[in-house]
Image (tube, rainbow over all chains, first blue to last red):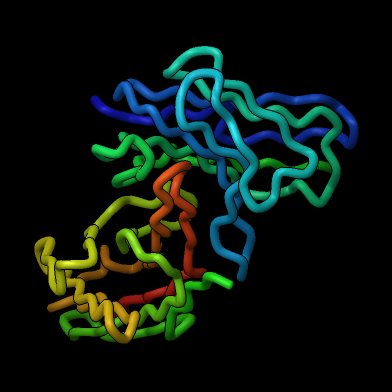
Length: 117
Length: 115
């Protein structure tokens, strides 16, 4: 089954303790992206990756890191989590169009609910 | 500034009734517009995608329209069912030829279907 798999689904951690949220897709998609979703704000892009070893900042990258060493995996790293990073996180992937630049039809993961205390 | 605005923020209708959700955008240059359905606590799922040249697209009881001149889109739901209760998100992609296109999300319309 074509899917984007995030782990863990739920995570409670303490301020300053490094954590990684994993994301893996089995559709051979070039494009992958991380979003956070907060009440009343909708989905906001954290980082995205056009392909292996190609990553770029989204709208809210502060406090986050990513890597894209393999096409299928795109982990989100919080080096020193803070309470304002408490949120619902989604990973998404997409193939790109003929131009190689325009993502079509995201597939989203099931989400990771992170609480930082 | 590129924006996507959805209305209403929330909507309650009775099962079996029709409803229409609105999306206005200021994204330019425009590439495509998608509607997603997001059940509570789950990831969004794509319903429709429309490019500049398309003005209507259907997916079962969901029909999306696009007016690229006025930069408006609507999502019409026919004969609503309890399972239609969800948030509906309008997503507009900006066309950028030399790098990844900017993707702008609306904040969604929360639809509740009452029996």
